[in-house]
Image (cartoon, rainbow, N blue to C red):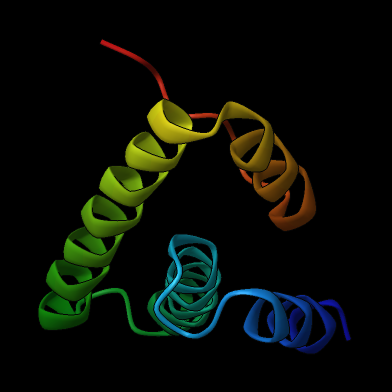
Length: 87
């Protein structure tokens, strides 16, 4: 599974507090909540939690893009998520 191999590679390199590891964890939570919300459309509390996690991931990705563009592009490619819009 891609998730486990990606997490193991990141956790071996830098540890669980790294930006990349946090983005991977948030991405997994987002995917899980999205599939939950497809079944439970009126679960507004989960929708709020999803929006909060999306915001956190967006801020972390913006920080990573500012600090190290190469690692940012690599992580975006591995997770197959879209690039964030810059202001």
